[in-house]
Picture: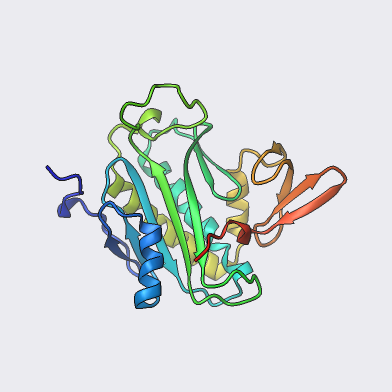
Length: 241
């Protein structure tokens, strides 16, 4: 018995995107390895063939400084929120926590990752990888309620949702947001993301403690700590490449 998704159940990607299945490997790590050994393939989506979680990573080739290009993260996040809006029951509520967390019905249910060819916000990167991960099925043997601040899609009523369905829908909605980002800039994505952020204006503990007072024009966090307000740019979430 195989744990891989049958070929007929593989996601169908929209034009400008191409899928690359990686079995049970980490798609984000595999995307990094492929770039370092075979070069950049913009629009390539690496995805895991697993049913317990949606795991995928898209490779982009921005034509702008990294500090601006990181706005594509919002397109990836909003694409996943819209995919859930199309596939999940209507009572499922999706929110974000800056910069890399996604919540379903108030509990953590996935994360985003990013890596680039440079960490200099003023430099134009050769490539930018953004990954998305979301648990679908409960961990086998896990005690119900052991982690009340975390959940899975199955636990929130998405009992028929599969990873290939979610990856396919996410890729299509993400592409819509990327096109809008390229045509209109970050402003519309900025507004849509803020509307789905449930801790804006609240005290937060991560990535640093403080009052989350807003976003700057590039999507960075404005964090009030005592009498000072600090800017945490989106580039702070970049992983070593």
